[in-house]
Length: 438
Image (cartoon, rainbow, N blue to C red):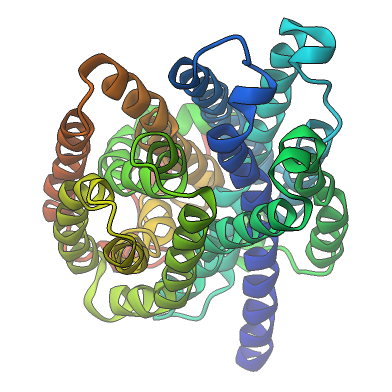
C-alpha cells in the first residue's frame, strides 16, 4: 500500500513538473517577446521606451486575469477534482499561446492587433491562474509524510524550467534566422510550438490518479458549494500572509526574467544574445537548486527557509541593477548565475507554504487565489512599474528602491510565520474547518 502510494506520488510529481513547465513556457514566451519584439510589432508608432511600457502593460493584463483563473479553476478543482480541472487549464493556456503565433501585427490591422494580443494574454492568464495552485495541491496530497516540501517543489520547478525552455527556443530561433527575419516572422515559431507541447502535457495528465486526500473528503461529505467564499470569509489571514511572503520573490524574479532583457539592451547597451544566455544560465541554477532548498524546508521548517531566503533576496534586490549598470559582462554573467540560487531559496517552498494555510476541501481555491494575487502584486506589475519609474526619474535607483521595499515586506512576513507551519499541511486542523461543510 505504501509502496503503491510512493509510486503514484512520483508519477504525479513528474506529470505536474512537465505540465507546469509547458504552461510556464507559454507564459514566459510572452514575457520575452514583450521585452524584445512586441514593442516593434504591435506598438511601432511609439518611441522605444514608450513602446516597451505598452508591451509590458499587455503582459500585466495576463497577471490581472490570473486571479480570475484561480477562482474559476479553484472552484471546480475543489468541487469535481484536481486532475480533470488541470487538464482544462493546460488546454486553455495552449490555445491562447498558439493563437498568438498567428496574430496579425500593427502593420496589417492597426490597433486591433494590440486588442487581439491582449485578449490572447487574458486567455493565458486564466489558464495559468488555475494551473500552479492545482498542480501543487495534487502533488502534495500524494506526497509521503515528511517530504511534502520536496514533492510540492516539483510544480514550482516548472517556473525555471519553462523559462529556460522559452529562452532557449527564443534564442535558437533568433540565431538561426537572423535578427531581421526573426523580428519579421520568426518570433511566431516558439508560440506555434506550444500546440505540440500541450498534447504531451494532456497525455501525461490523463494518466495520473486523483488526489487521495480529496477523495477522502468527498467520501465523507459533499463538496463545498462556493469554496472561494469560505476562503475569503474564514481564511483571509492565510491569503494575506501568503501574499506578503511571496511578493518579494515574485517582483525580483520578473526583473531577473523579463525587465533585464529590455533594460540591459536599451539602457546598458548589452547584446540581446548575451542577456538571454545570462537568463538561461540563471534559470538552470534555479532549477538545479530548488530541490535542495525544498528539502531544507522539510528538515528545518518553512519559517527558517523563508526568513533566510528573504534576507538573501533583499541583498539581491539592492545589487541587481547596479551590477548590470557596470556593463562588465563577466561580472553580470556570474551575478545572474548566483541570482538563480537566490530566487530558488524563496520560490521552491511557495506551494508548500500557501497550501499549508488551507484545509483539503477548499485547498485548491485557497492556494490558487493566494498565489495568483501575490504574483499579480509582485511580478505582474513590476516590469511595468520599473519601466515607468525609469522613464520618470531617469535613474535605476528608483527601481532598486521599489524592489527593496517589496523585499522588506516579505522578510517581515517570513519572520512571523508560526514555527510549526511546515507541519500544518494535512496534519493539524486548519482554522474554521468545522465551517467547511456549511
